[in-house]
Structure formats: C-alpha cells, structure tokens
Image 1 (cartoon, one colour):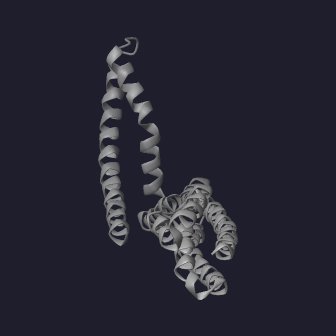
Image 2 (cartoon, rainbow, N blue to C red):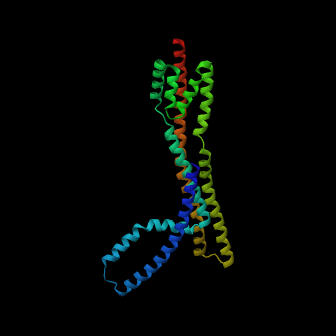
Image 3 (cartoon, rainbow, N blue to C red):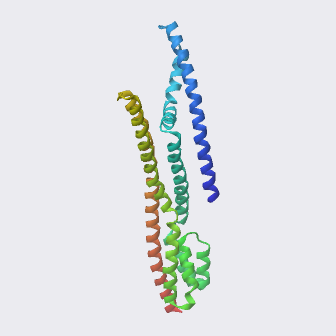
Length: 272
C-alpha cells in the first residue's frame, strides 16, 4: 500500500505540472484563435461559416476544463498545489480504507452456521479450519477463540474480547489521516486567502488610491484557494463518513457474532 500511495502522489504532482504547462499553452492558443476570429469576423460580418460553428461548439465543450485550470492558476500555484496534494493523499488513504473495509465484510450468518456444523461433525479442529479459510476479522476472532477452547470457556471469552480490540484497531487504521486532510485542506485555503488579501492591500497602498478593479481582482484570486480547500474537504468528508459507517456495522457484527460463538461453545462443551 505504501508503494500505491507513493505512485499516486507522484502522479498527482506530475498532473499538476502538466496542467500548468497545458494552461499556458492553451492561453497562447486561445489568444491566437481570438485574434484570427476577430479578423475574420471583421472581413465578413454577415457570412456564417459551418466550420466556425463547429469550432464554437468544441470550445464550449472544453470550457469547463479550461475554466477549472484557469482558476487553479489564478488561485496561486503554490497554495493550490498543497490543496491538490491534500486531496490526492486523502483520496489514496480513503480508497485503501474502502477496499479494506469491503473485503473485511463477512456473511456472519453463513460463517456461524458453517462453524456450528463443523463443530458437530468434526470438532474444534474442523471449526478452526473453516475460520482459517474465511476472510475477515470475524473469522479471525473465531479462530483465536477456538484455539483456546481447551483452556476453558473463560479463556475463550477473554481471547475473543482482546482480539476483537485488535481487529477494531485495524479497522480504524488510517482514519485519523483522513480527518487530518479534511481539516488541513480548508486551512490551506484560508491561508492562501489571507496572504492574497495582504497582497491586495499592499497594491492599494502602493497605488495610493482604492480602485475597484484593483481590489476586486485581488479579492477574487484570494478567495479561490478557500473554495478549493472547501471542495476538497467536502469530497474527503463523504469518504470519511462512509468508512465510519462501515466500521460501525462491522464492529456490531463482530460483537453479535462473538456472543453467538460463546453460546455455541457452551452448548458444545455441555454435550461433550
């Protein structure tokens, strides 16, 4: 997983660099196309060319992508890059957690039924084999409990409780990092906004006069970083809440299944 995070981070930084270069190239291309279109329009005002209409439709389809990159450049490459990196690292951890939690989900009823049948037909070793071949934290807890069956039901209960805490820690692993990036992204955005506002006031002081165009332009650019940080935080918050809900569901299943396992072992102990 560490290699995956490193690869995603490198790809993110390369994407940022490529976006900046493409933005500069598109600005030059747009300026050239605008000049040529203006000259053509002045030469023949009343002529409608189908090719021109097709070019306009293509420009409209790519306008959102171009506008997004334009806002990224306007917000400042330094602060916007940090915001994008927070999104990349946050998403990398969130996606890893989503995959892990989905793989950790187990059909509890089927597992309990299989363990109970294995106990009746093949004893504790057969039940341990069923747990060993089943994926998920619940099967691991069952295996630890069954491994200490010969030491008594009390030891089984202590083992189940202790190993349940270990499995809960594994489920919650990495969630603090997602919470960090959720809090960090808006902070980086606010920091860029404050610095942008300071720069705007410096320009006002240098000019010696408050010009609406000067103030509005500086404030607009300063607020872009805040918007970016808030968007990143909202995206990561969705993944965070999904993971928390998934963890709560798995933990509830673990607790219910552990109680059921103890009941099954008590009944099995009474029969044998």
